[in-house]
Length: 100
Image (cartoon, rainbow, N blue to C red; front, top):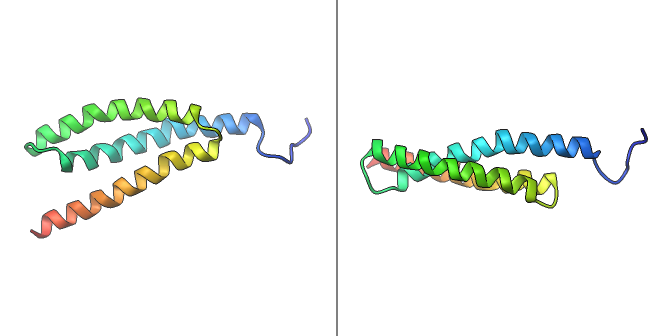
């Protein structure tokens, strides 16, 4: 089987998308749940439960996004950039809330 010089093989691209959907989607949903629990206007247990319920929908959307993206690299970036931003904002809100 000859190697393609134009990009990764279709099998590697598919494996990358599957890993992005399973692991990257889970990471995005988890970070989203943490981020949203700080924003919901209720007691902490109810906010965590509500954010967790919404994160199931985010996980589903992330899986759809991974397989709809134009490339595996774009799929990874579409998961990692929002997850990183929400993670940083969650850290800021956590430490800003504990200082008050």
